[in-house]
Each structure stands twice: as C-alpha cells, then as structure tokens.
Image 1 (cartoon, rainbow, N blue to C red):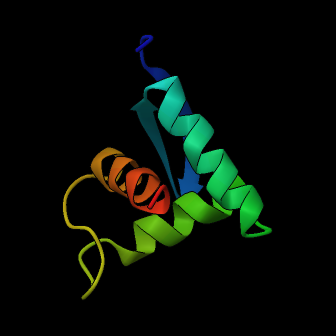
Image 2 (image 1 turned 180 degrees about the horizontal axis):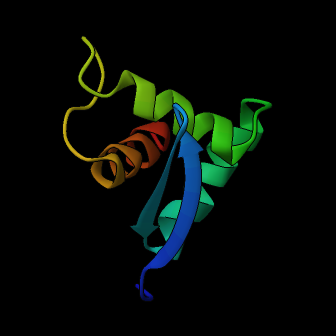
Image 3 (image 1 turned 180 degrees about the vertical axis):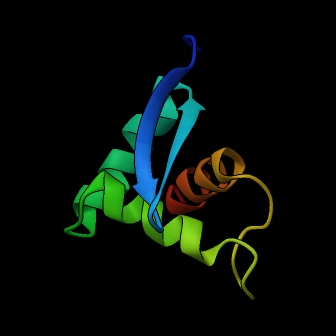
Length: 73
C-alpha cells in the first residue's frame, strides 16, 4: 500500500482532516458514487453515525476504513 493521503472536510460545522491509504479513498469514492452522493456527504453520514447504535465507534479514520471494507461485501 502507498502512503497516507490527507483530506480535509467540514463536518457538523467543524474542520477536520483524515489521513487514509489511497485504496480506502478510492473505495469510499466508489461507494459514494454508487449511492448517488458526494464523498463529503458519505463521510458526513459515517461521522454522524459513529457512536450511535449500529454505527462504528472510534475515530473517524477507523470508521471510514470499516465502512469501505463493509461495502465490499
């Protein structure tokens, strides 16, 4: 795997940065596009679901990785 790629987002009115491997960004972009939404919208949905019942607990980078892997099934 290549090095990490950092992207910045505005989520719930706050700026945040997330660093993931390019393969995860590619997978998340594909998931977003298949669902007819932007990558930013998908990241915001995943962020909002963290810690809620059925959501992924932990930091945003981990939640994004888990979502990308889950979508491959």
